[in-house]
Image (cartoon, rainbow, N blue to C red; front, top):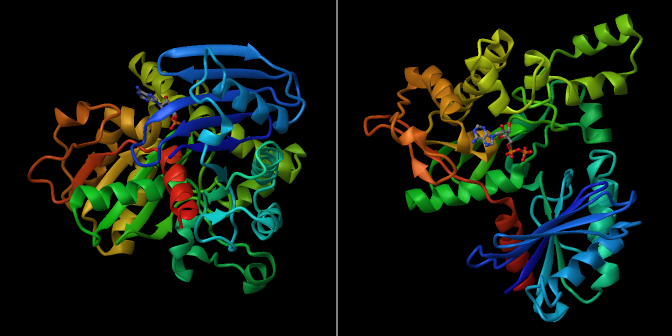
Length: 394
Ligand code: ADP
């Protein structure tokens, strides 16, 4: 089976053609500068081709993807018939979606109704869906939501302690994001441990970072909230912050709330503290060169991640397994070590040799660690392809 996985942004569109059973990726790529001019980068194995193709809308971008997939020189399929289904990443499913969903009119309407919750992403995701419907009207399509995995959280985890009317009238609550990644890791952990009952804390640490507390495969709590701004500090996001900071800054600097939130989303986090970069490799280099702000940024990050793990240990009444995934989680031994040092009190102990691993699934805890610690590379596209295949095959 071949599933085309689509992740549509406002001016970009990523794609992968993959086999959901084996995880083999036959081709992948990126359309950029949609609505501006248009550029396609297409990769098959180690071979890469870049083409400037006019993309006035997402429809031309999808058409360009289908064309290059069938291209005699760079293609991997002879006809669109070889694509069995399309899986779309959708950011916000609100309270309407606790699982992935076959795309029909009702599904599209529900995604539209979630636009107030995901004002930047949902419209772009919908453009990707509509563009695929336009160029492949008969292909089954599936929406996979970033929020869906977290819908098993109990009310004490997802409700904010503000007047109930905002929840009842406006759906204001914790939703959480990176759900496709957290779900993938929870499934991997079930397979690693060979059982369905386990207490897991998954640390998805990338440019955006979130943690989830998972019991027996179900999400019990997660660090992001109504939006991806909440939780631990990230590349450019502040993470959790006292709302009065917003009031103070808006009043003092004459900023609008939107401007202030833009600062909290795009200029804060590791970039804000270090003043150097949002990228952990730059921060590690800066810290090694003696830049104290880079050191502080890294310390702040690890401290806050460790605090979340500690609080989730309390939420789950103990942890069996701690996993690290995404760019930093998979490739940052120093970050993992610094986080786990805080957790020694609960018996977490890394094997320093094993912890040198980058980008591979492996247990990195010492044999006498009370909690197993693993690096598990995430694969959101594979999770989307698998959900798509499951729904389409019934
Ligand atoms: P996104 O949230 O954009 O998907 P990623 O999961 O790709 O982000 O993570 C990006 C982060 O991962 C960057 O801060 C980058 O520095 C970090 N990263 C990637 N490779 C390495 C590495 N080899 N060592 C340390 N950090 C790395």
